[in-house]
Image (cartoon, rainbow, N blue to C red; front, top):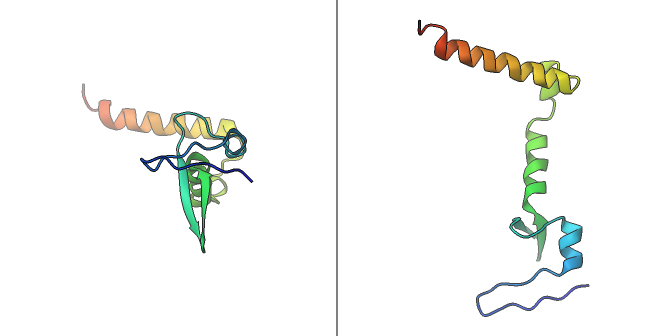
Length: 91
């Protein structure tokens, strides 16, 4: 168990062992999640990534993306379509 003291401005220093376990460093953001009568501190980037992964679940299969090259090819196709929409008719 780690203990941190609250300053007069409501700030705390997260102990180094906790920062390491959270995977956070200077400048990173943490999120406070209410869990019943407790507040959980989590790495905001990891939570955002997990939420994004959930939101996109099944999309790779739906789009037929099986590996990294498939993703690169899809990005190239989209870029070409966008370029054509913007510049192809500007002769």
